[in-house]
Length: 193
View 1 (cartoon, helix red, strand yellow):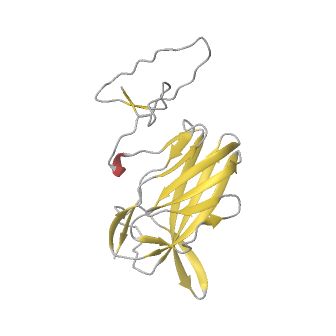
View 2: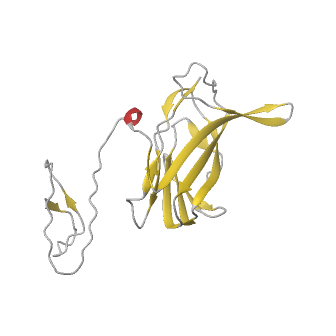
View 3: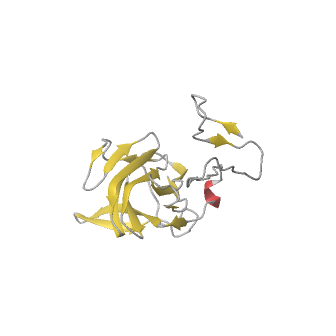
């Protein structure tokens, strides 16, 4: 194990495990101690499956069409589906996020990766109804002071900016205080052109 604490103090904040399959922990006192063990790996987006532990996130994509002065939503299917809606640069896309939480949770973060062909219509970070929205280079981040128990929904508008096949990657919701409570949705592929 390698201590990654910058000041090399006696109490480590984190370790990096180098080429080991197991971890052993030695208790230093008689007092209760708590520890989390995380494993981060790189994985092909298409292999990542939906997961939830106390918090669940779902994401749906809709194309917005103007027909006779009315906005009509048509849900997008995965790009490999032959019935998927065809997109072109300039099309507007609505992404609907649905979060389900088994209990009230304070300080929750959502990392919503964007497909490279999608540009948010509103490019300003700031407070919204009950969350703070931050624009990143390739993702949007949402911070909830309080995520209520049950279902919460919010939406984001995008423009399609270029042609090609693009992965939206996965969106992740997690408790900042206790990252063991987290969830992610599956990858979504968008084809434009």
